[in-house]
Image (cartoon, rainbow, N blue to C red; front, side):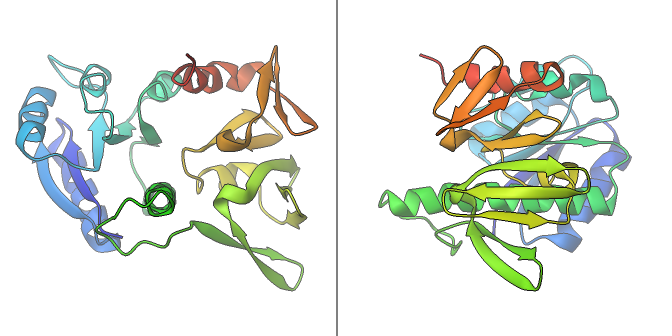
Length: 242
């Protein structure tokens, strides 16, 4: 998948690391590197990108402040050494939140999440009859290993994931598959159309039927929203409340 991206960070070493990770592990086009937010905003006026790797703690204009000024179709991966901004970051068009120092393993997990997200977007455009320039598949999917079988499951068909210690149950309308994966590991590979609502549940936002008090409803399934995840989850929901 070919995506255009921009790195915005006031630390040269952090910029160099991200540039190396992108260059060695993706086919994305790195269109620019900016060392402060004002420079980046000027750059984006003439050269829009699909994705911005955005540091939070920068002088004069912070990453959070810059994020509020970005075009609505520009997606963000926040990069920072501070975990306390994670909840606020998802009030923007955020795909992932990378804590520094960024490891190859964590970057690769983010890469999968990013490409799954943009693959889903392009699949939606193709279904709607909108031409797209890249050759991404019409549907994002996973192969899920359960026992000796590999099952192909479309991302859009997954209703929710339910965790059971070291295992997780993948639930679609037609089947339930038990896999030997922790929810935390699964969450790192999912697109932003999914949200963690509880230590034991990740839900597909597109499949939600209703939200009431501290529960979400998918068909007849009632899933609790825990206090730990409530603020981040509800901030995302508020973006679509009329």
